[in-house]
Image (cartoon, rainbow, N blue to C red; front, side, top):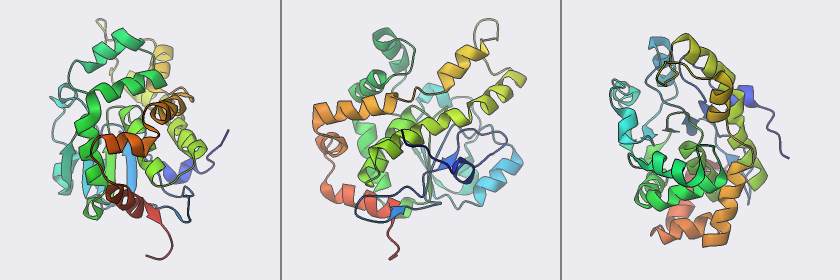
Length: 258
């Protein structure tokens, strides 16, 4: 099993935003590595306080891709993209109501099969997301959902695959979510952010819910291999071209010759 040793370098420890990290520094096939300070993945951004938002501004973000369902963005206040002057691309892979349908089909637990279930809803959104990723003017960018692990994890895994990152590294990047879960839980308990009829939930249950099972992204990628011949096959079925794939790779990989 591959272990990523530089979590402290790639993790940006905002005080009121979780699971925000850089996917730079991963070796890519055919040479080079993913560029630092170009693609960030994260949980929701609206809870950031003023100092967090100021720090976010220092990253030079030009685009924020928000993967949350419309119902998740209501009543959350002004998105930091507006303050940054960044392009805000709201491209939810799942429509309102989809999570309940996925719960009925796969259970509430996170799994690779549940991730594959996203594909029943996500085609047009995924196509648009990768068109944004293919545009060099989009960078630096942030891809985020609510917890920054499932929809963000699936999207990032496909992007890293296009960049030529080894499967073991993709899986290890996915599992880094678990390094920030306890910090998120501590804040959520302190601020009464657990839902439920009594306003309380079991922290152990939340740790499972907001962490990730290590094998899930591998099961998802294996499913793409079996159904479509891989990430490129799936994205190609959405109408995306080899030129788009090459552009995503150019945007994500630093070959040292830029």
